[in-house]
Length: 104
Image (tube, rainbow, N blue to C red; front, side, top):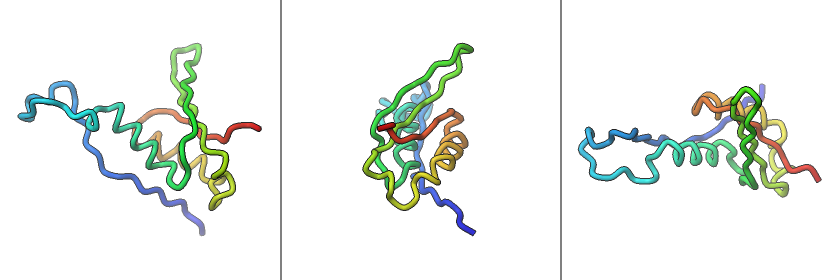
């Protein structure tokens, strides 16, 4: 059976009250937003992110649309992994995301 494997680096998120941990400043790389960005980069693996759109539904729900680089479309069955990318990103960040290639 073919299982999809996704490698994601282990990153630290520091919350607003990081001073309790004895730090003067919170590095930009430790903010929630930047960690989620990096996770997104990691999840899509061999492909590159081409663009991002945030779709806000009528009920206020956010949906991240991630457009992947069209030149990677035929690389190692990325098409088949799009659902996997969504599932992994949802599990790690609790955010809904849709991965797609730009329509030509």
